[in-house]
Image (cartoon, rainbow, N blue to C red):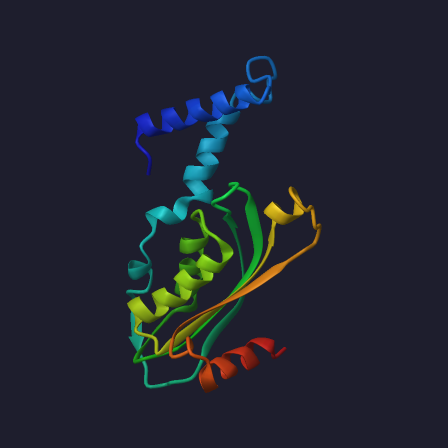
Length: 191
């Protein structure tokens, strides 16, 4: 969590930015507290993942001898692009082939949010999730498919309304392809 001094500096910076672009911060009652609301939204929610530890999220495990795929589909989330600080929203599908431990499904959701609530490229979000499952859980292999609509593409620049981007990330035994990756993709495409 940001210190009181850092919070004040962030609020001052947002107010200065709004003034610099010509927003009537001092005369429009709707803008008078915007600098505080923006900082609260970013520190309390949009960038809250920086305060989360993926190793701690994956620490509460259960032993297993079941080697089959664990796949959680359609985790709704959003992230902020590090280039323009604009949101991307959509779904994340995450799965892994256990080593000798599994985690509760809620931990997978928390892991996705841990990395999504940071400034992150979509491709990096998937890489971080998959790598954490191998590194911290000991999964034999992991995959993460991210399907987002990015406002960097829909609201600015090309303004390709409705355009979606899908990225795949692989770690462990899934990185090189093969039967496990094929099983992951087949399970993901099943209804």
